[in-house]
Structure formats: C-alpha cells, structure tokens
Image 1 (cartoon, rainbow, N blue to C red):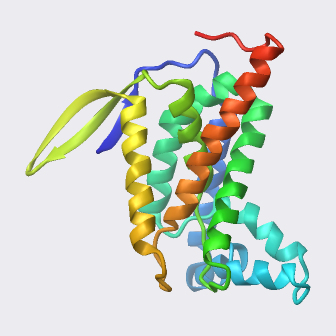
Image 2 (image 1 turned 90 degrees about the vertical axis):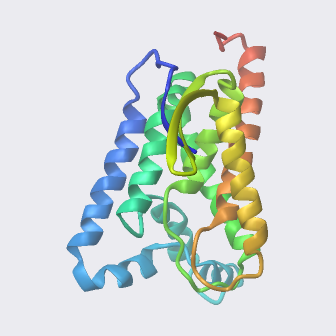
Length: 229
C-alpha cells in the first residue's frame, strides 16, 4: 500500500514543509559529496544511543550527543530512504502545517523527531549503530493527520499479486494500517542487535503526534482560536 496523493487541499502555502524537504535534500547531496568519508560523517552526526547514554552518565560531554538528536533528523542513508520520507512529508505535511501554523508546526515536527529518538534510545540504550532519518518526525506528522483529517481521501496504490489497483481510501485506514505494520515489525525485531529500520522510532513518533495534536486542539478550542472544518 503506497499513498500517491490526498484529496485534501491546504489553504496556505506549506512554507515550512517545503523548507524541511529542501534542507533534507541539500543535506543528502552534501553527504554524497563526501565520498568515502560519508560513513564517518553519519557516524558522527547520526544518533548513537550508546553515546547519549554515556553522556547522561557523565562519561562524555553532553552537548555532542544531544546535538545529534537534531542533526540525525536531516540525514539519510540512501536515495530510497530520502525519497520515501520526503514523499510522505509532501503528501501529509501541508495540511498539518496549515492547521497548526508555521511556527507551531516547526516546533511540533522537531518535538516529534525528538520523542521518536528517545523511544529508540530507551529500547536500544547501548547500541553503537548510528540512526539517521526524518521518519520519526514524519511519523508524528502522520499521527497528527490521522487525528485531524481521518475521513480525508488518500489515493493509494495497492499491489494485488501481479497487478496494481489505485483506490481512494480514508486517511485513518491508510495511516492506521501503516502504524500497525510499524508496530508488528518493531515487535518482531525486538532483541535484534543488527542495523535496519528503527521501527519503534516510527511508532513513538506516530503516538506522540496523535497525543500532541489532540492536546493542542483541545487547548485551541478552549481559547476559540481553532476553527474546525
């Protein structure tokens, strides 16, 4: 199941969403320019859980490992990793930004990435494998979208054996199935010490997004600053 687009036009230009995509693309092109030094760069600027744990115990300076929580959100391991993440952000980010506003959306995005990173560290505290990618922050955007626009139609490509079907499905169904896949993939991967996908970062980001957007919506309703569709 692969989303192609949503039938949910935003009411404003998604400046922040486009800026985040641009920053990720520029960062990846910079990675490619490093040639054989790319792995060294990702190891130093990606999130390494063990370093963060050592820093929290005072064995390392805290500033460096904490900085990587932010920097890792804008780095990617390959073209498919980058394009997949940016595609989801392009489809779902504009509407969430439209509802939150540019400043709050920026803070929401970064907080979602931070929350997903913390869950990943909590479940893999002594891992020395660097984690990179925007997927945790984007998962928070998906969680927010599922809450805000559950009935929005998402045009989705569905593979059926050797054929492909394009259908418009409710966003809650598309994103709900995405979450279920991440959850069970993460469950089956528990205890694995190798590299791969940080499934629980996706789960953590999605849950954070749902909770945070619900709290923000309630706060906005109380102040009558949130106009519902």
